[in-house]
Length: 158
Image (cartoon, rainbow, N blue to C red; front, side, top):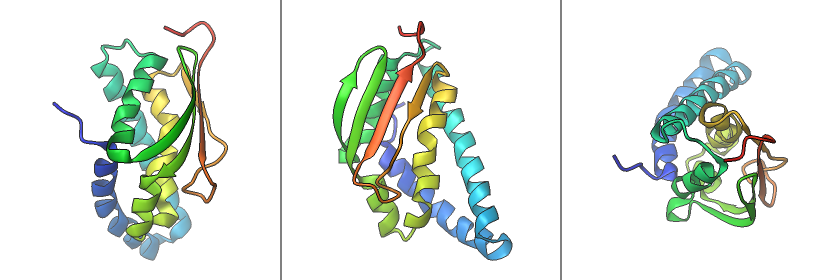
């Protein structure tokens, strides 16, 4: 089965999640609604990571993660400058994020980081817990670029 480009998937999800989030805010307040959304999206990201690990027959690697970025960048969803891509590290800066642009256009810019950005690091927990992400800033939260720094734990590169 062909994968749906991630930007399309996230847009469709946001069309459903946005009204649910608005209703939660009205009934239980923004802080609780945001915490619930954050927890749910993080759990979904771990599950998605497991799905892709299963698709790889459990043979995950930094090279496999790099290949998955084809889904996340499809259709120009992300413009990025790759700084390093090897078995030990995948470093890049996102210079244009159509996810952020799309959420803003939908009136969901305030929760865009919950819908997308929070997925990135926890995705690795499901895909390959030997891969970690450090990111100090995102376009979604107002920075000029997103700084992605993936690392394979020492002795686990394949």
